[in-house]
Image (cartoon, rainbow, N blue to C red; front, side):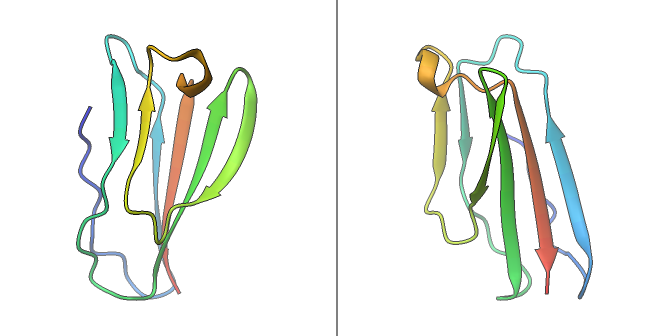
Length: 84
């Protein structure tokens, strides 16, 4: 599954991406792109097995979830990109 994230987030603003429909998806991968500012921050809320966790993906090389592994099967991912 590939979803491009807007790289143009204005100063003191944010963009949200709510990913919920994983029908037919075998894996989900986040690969950082080129952002318009070093002040961009990326936070993720990840829901697995009914429980939410918060993760800082700002400096992540990549994130991958394999839906064939029960412990990696996500139900929902909310990405919050902000520029501070």
